[in-house]
Image (cartoon, rainbow, N blue to C red; front, side, top):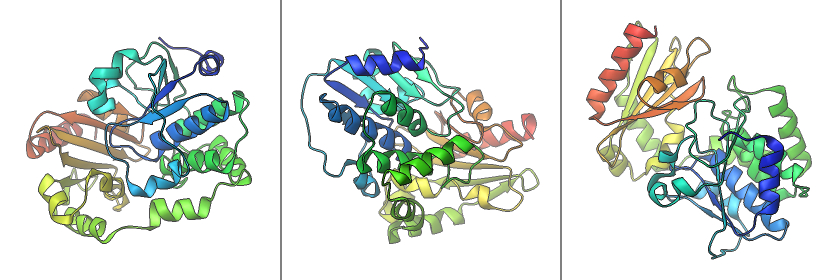
Length: 315
């Protein structure tokens, strides 16, 4: 059920031996939220650890720098930036029905936790965690500031997406005052790529297709492309924005061949269209400008289904 801010803070204040769950294919927001909360809880003298179903890209190593492992039997479970239980990935079966508190910012999220605190107007989950951590009376140190700043920056495309608010900028400014290394973080998140990632981008450009009089652009990513380029699915963070960078494109799609035989669809839109609504038609969700869904079909068939729906029902 939905809960309010003060209840969410109280639950965390009264809990101990806390397990923090982040979503599969972890990005800067879920990891920034998770590690910021972990650091805050440990500062309060609580035992806390973070768990993710997938491996964490090395570019996020600054988030957990200096943190030690801790092994204990959890007594309280909180998920951060997890819009629905299937986003827990391989952890879903074990933990989905045991989550005591979910902190999220996806207005289209599907309630699965015993208690959910959601602020859909927040540009990132990290914005919410920043307020929660302050309400817990935790001193914001550089480690926490770096974590929160990373989530704020990555979920807003370095503060250029339409989800950015004045509050987002105020929080970012405060984080910099607390010591967040904004320059280094943004360089690492947006301006530094491995040669393998660039090889994958080159392959992706070769799959580029245009539909709907140039208003829709699609890139397809196969498992073979990942294998040939020597990358993994974490490299897709840099791929997804490409289609919307094309002049005239209103709706950009990235279609990825998943390991389970399904097709993962990522959608980015201009202010004229609702990405979450398109994804919701296929059982997914997300934000107004960015959403995702999974279709149990081949990448080619899934692409055709989504394109057909967009052209006949959206444009």
